[in-house]
Structures are given as structure tokens and as C-alpha cells.
Image (cartoon, rainbow over all chains, first blue to last red; front, side, top):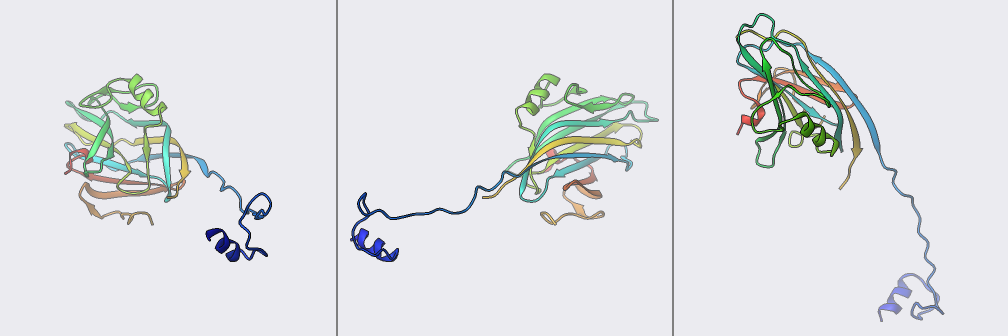
Length: 184
Length: 41
């Protein structure tokens, strides 16, 4: 019965069931959607003053409808000019479903030293985070440093000035990412 | 506009927005405050 109804719906000239002797010609049309990927370079300097005891966070969001995987990253903060004590630090964190961020990397330096993270070296690791340059390299190499276009999946790069002077030097953020269009 | 893009001067839970840049389609939103995002509840 189902075969007959299908034949009628398809305007077959016969009500014979579909079989080797009574085939149903079928033609598919369309094409494969191209895979949309691109390489994105982002390089910027942040110049606003960061007072002693305060934070600055930069949130990275990729293009709408895409996800980005960081392949290369460089974050640099100069020594704090005029400071005589304390430390300063950088952290890289990602949001979690419960709303708080999860720290991936947290590094610090003395007031008179730079703080930086690249693929090949990082300042002194602190806190519950990646503990070595090797772990950091492996984390990125395994394509774990990813982010999206919204506040729920952005990546946060934070700077804390725990020295006794304001940070007036320029902070540098550079990364290269592979961005892929996604649909659901 | 992606996810209600903040503007300079907006006050977010993380602090005040001091800079918004769009570079090659990526948006960088910089805020200053008293606590890092991983400390916020």
C-alpha cells in the first residue's frame, strides 16, 4: 500500500511497487557547501593608565557565526616605571557555564620586570593554572585556546597592577587565529 | 552588532569599558575595574 501511494505521489505512470523491474528515477541536485575558514591576525596596543591596585581586562570576541582557534599569541606588559615594590601579572581566562571564568594561564613579574607570554616563553606562573612554558605550548598546540563571538564564549586577557605606581606603558596583544564559520 | 556590543563608558560587572576595537572582524573590549573576571560571581 505504501509503495502504491508513493508511486502516486511521485506521478509514476504505474502503481507497480518500486523494484529492479520498475525503478524510480531519482536525481539529486545541489552542491557541497564550501568550508569557510580564514586566518585572522590581530595586533593592538592598549595605552590607558592602570592605577596601582586595579585591573584591566580585554575580552576577545571573534566574528559572529564563527569560532576562532588561537595558533600564535603574544602578550606583553612593560615594567612599571616609577614603581619601587610589588608585582604585576597577566591572566588568560575563559568563561564557564556557571558564569565565572576559568583561569588558563596566570603569570607575574616583579615591578621592574616585563610580564609576557608567547609560544616559547612565559613569565613566572602563579596560582592554579598552567605551570610551564611547555604546558602552555602544548595547550595551544592541541587547539584548546578557542573563543567565540559572545560574552559566554569570549576569551579574557587581564592585567593586575599590584605595584606602588600606575602602569603608564603600552600593553601589547597580538594573536593569529584560524576562524571557522559554524552553523547548527 | 554582536551580543550587545558595549560602548566606551558603559559599566559592566567587570568594570568600566575604556576601549572597544574591531580588528579584522574580531572585537576587543577593554574594561578597567577592581577585580579580574575570574574573581567575579
